Amino acid sequence: MKNVLSTPWKFVQTPGLTLILYESRTMYRQIFVDGRPLPAVVGLPTWYGYSIGRWEEDTFVVESTGFNGWAWHDQAGHPATEALHLTERFYRRDFGHLEMEITIDDPEAYTEPWTIVHELNLLPDTDLLEYVCNENEKDAQHILGQ
Image (cartoon, rainbow, N blue to C red; front, top):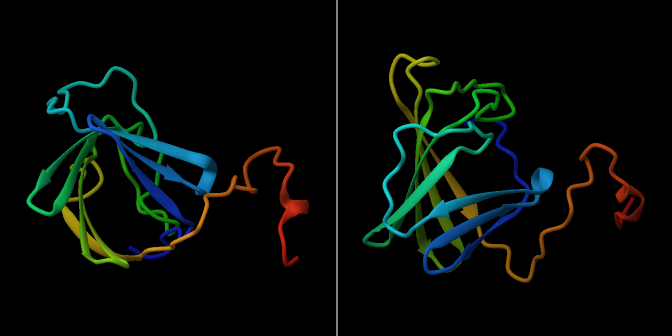
């Protein structure tokens, strides 16, 4: 995937729920890890879909459906539709590196599923900041190093 946003994000884990907090656009995702199945029909489509997660040995597997069809997969404009079924596999190779494998299965946009792998680096001692490019933002003047 080209042009993937490189802003930081973090996992927050609780016994029945994992959250992903994104610095970009100050967004979040809920991933239910309480054993519930992925629903056949999601009532209200969303930007990030409806997600369930499970562990397969040392890999965290997340399946998502229920997307609104308005999002792109990347900044290059690869489309997604409401038919998207996304499978993500997060594998921590070592202390500082995470491998994220993403399989895009969207029969309304693509002739067959396709997979990309993205390597991520740990950013220790880093806090997420409010994303300054949001509509009506007021913090750009506070960015250091201008």
